[in-house]
Image 1 (cartoon, rainbow, N blue to C red):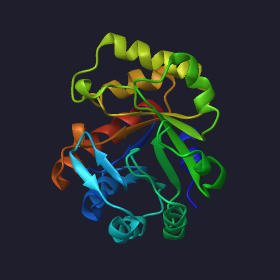
Image 2: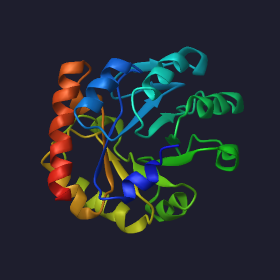
Image 3: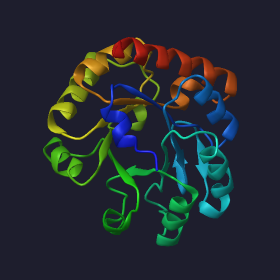
Length: 230
């Protein structure tokens, strides 16, 4: 099994790609450009891309093909609250070779904390209180700072956003990932790395939805990560 946590702890920041749909060709383009981990979805309506994702029966074949493309860590968002993976689906994902799961902590059922056979990423939500960040993080192997409200999606980051990310980093002791809910640029990677973030997860807001733009944008973000790591 590939370990996302080991990857994030080794020479951060690391580049994670979350495709707008479970399309092996999009993932292949991202991997060619240097993506170091992949996160796909089931049981979700993806706000940034407008894509709806089905259950494991529907999405499983594509996830299997994505898993077979490389040995980088592959994770799955297991639902959005309106629907979540069942025990049987979680078992099937492990059989496919998924390396980690992800979900908003307000959606993830408590039984998954006990029974999940792979690493767990927990997503902080905009409505989560700052005083709860540390205790939430204590339940997970790593945390996704998905704290931007939907009305901010695709907008340029401002100074307050950087300060908010800095507060989260100060509160959370485990590996920490920033998703591109905002229109982050590769030039922002150094700033976020300076705050102590371990990974940046790029998706439709910055990559677009076709293979050409995915590959081009992934390459720029990977170059920015490499520059920080030098």
